[in-house]
Each structure stands twice: as C-alpha cells, then as structure tokens.
Amino acid sequence: MEPTGSPSATAVVAARGAAVTGRLSRLDRFLPVWIGLAMLGGLMLGRIVPGIAEALDALKIGTVSLPIAAGLLVMMYPPLAKVRYGELNRVTSDRRLLVSSLTLNWVVGPALMFALAWLLLPDLPAYRTGLIIVGLARCIAMVLIWNDLACGDTDAAAVLVALNSVFQVAAYSLLGWFYLVALPGWLGLEQQALDVGLWEITKAVLVFLGIPLLAGSLTRTIGEKRKGRDWYEGTFLPRISPWALYGLLFTVVLLFALQGEAITSRPLDVGRIAAPLIAYFAIMWTVSFWLGRRVGLGYERTATLAFTAAGNNFELAIAVAIGVFGATSGQALAGVVGPLIEVPALVGLVYVSLWARRGFYPSSVTAKEATA
Image (cartoon, rainbow, N blue to C red; front, top):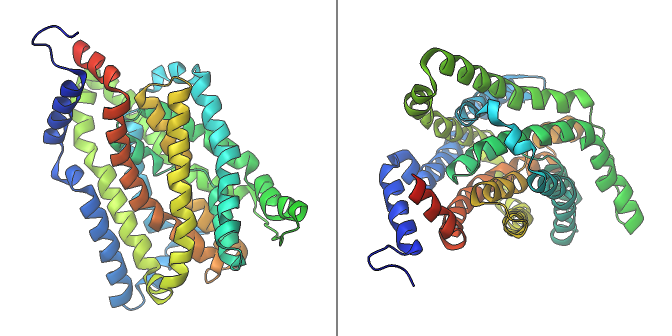
C-alpha cells in the first residue's frame, strides 16, 4: 500500500506529461497539423506552379537532389548536435540493443517488406520491386527526428544509424541480388535484376549522415570547450532544436511538390502502394517495441530501437530506383510514395510511443521524477 498522500505512479506520469505538454512550442504541439499542411501545400505547389517539379529535379548533383539534401541536413543537424559523443561507449557496450537492432534492420525488415510486397502487389511487378528496394534501405536520416520527438535515447540513435550506414554500404547490393533474384528464383517467382554501384550507396551515406554528424560533433566539442556544457545544453540546444522541424516541413513540401502530378493523377496506384507500406511500418514498430521490452531495455532505448527499425532510407531508395529503372518508372513512383506514407505514419507512431511510455514504463518515469 502506498503511503498516505504520496502520488500514484499513474498520477505522477500524468502530471509530468501535462507539464511537458505545457512546455512544448506551438510547432511541437501541432506537428500533425503542420505536416498535413506541408503535404497539402506541396501537392498544390506541384499542380499550380508550372514546371516547378522539373526545376527542382534539375537542381541536383548526380542523383542527389540539392533542395531535398538541404532540407534533410537542416533537419538532422539539431538531433546530432544533442549527442554526447564522449559518452557513446555506454551505448556500444549494450549488446542487447546492438544485436536486436542488427537483427531487426537487416533480417526482419527486408524479409517483411519482401513478403508484404508479394502478398499485396502480386500483379504489379514494378511497384513490388520498388517497395522491396525501399525495404532494403535502412533509415539513417529521419529516424533521428522521430526518435527525438518520442523522447528516445539520442546517443543510441546516433550509434544505430552509424551502424546501419556501415551495413548499408557493405550489404545493400548483395541484399538486392538476394531478394530480387535469388530468393524469387528459389520460390519460383518472377526475378528482377538490380545493378547498384557501391559509390552511389557510399555517396548517399556521406551526404545524408556524414555531413550533419561531423557538424554536430564539432558544434558540441567547440561549444562545450568555449562556453561549458551547461550553456551548450541549456541555451544553445534549445535555440537550434526548432530547426529540425523546419527542415522536416521544408522537405515534406518539396517531396509532395516533386511528385504532386504523379500522386494526384494515379490515386488508385498510390493506394495500392500505400497498403503494404502502412502494414510494414505498423508491424515493424510494434515488433521492435515488443522486443525492446522483452530483452529488458528501458523506454528510451526501446523507442530508439523501434524507430530505427521501422524507418527507411528513402533518399537512397529513390536514387537507386531512378538510377536503375528511370525517373518515370513504377519502381521510382513506389520509392517516392514511401516517404509520403512514412512521414504521417511515423508521426502517428510518435504519439503511440509516448502513450506506451505512460502505460508500460510508469516505474521508470517515477524514478526519474524522484531523482530530478
């Protein structure tokens, strides 16, 4: 029995949640609204302004879109500036987290997308292939902001995306051959060759992870050296944090503007592509969150595990689909629909994660309250 007058775990969590909500900026509190408006604004921009998609698509180096790269770099910099790089050894020593993440990202994830693509798109080979390509590209970008919004472990997220990047460079082409040629052949299904250069994968990793990772590391090192950790984490980080969401919204507008015509002119096809993607995000996140609890991870690392496993590297997937099959191919459309479904789906899962935190981890929150 609790002592008279002491708050219950549920009451403490509810009070803490109300306090946190009260401290959120308007941008944070109404994120789903801003995401929806950004999606709508991008669609309208793509339909109303003649030639905007072609103009945006022309601004690229190789297969890297400069406007989208700019949005992603702005989006990723604040979360990576929060990482305490000198303390990452406490993450790399957690074998439960590392083994679980590698298994989910490189065994479960690609296999699940392969199964869903064949089950739900057996009559649409181009879209099916595009989805399998998406499933092979593990997330190294947007996962940082989903993890941040869900109050996950920022240091752990940095380690896991770095690990995914290494495996992506080493294994992407091999996994493409396995899931598009070898496995379908063994199962008596239609095969599809995939020729992906190692440099294309490495370039995507260097641009979308290497630049903001270096910037974040240098910022913390220089900031703490000159002003101290209290100033860095109490003054500087709150100033730059909103830019992560600004970058996200800018990127969403661009993605919808680039593909507005394709999305609005082929709504049934988009719906067919969306079905396996929605199932994938829901299943991967749920299984990963369950596994995190099962192996004894706390909320922060469980949330990080779930979001790093559920997200995908759509930048790489789109680049591969366009490079191999062409910009107007069904494979490219499937790659583009990927992030358009992923953004609202994972925004929703952020709220599910915060709800699960109150329901499944009340004792850990109570302990934090006691030591705060």
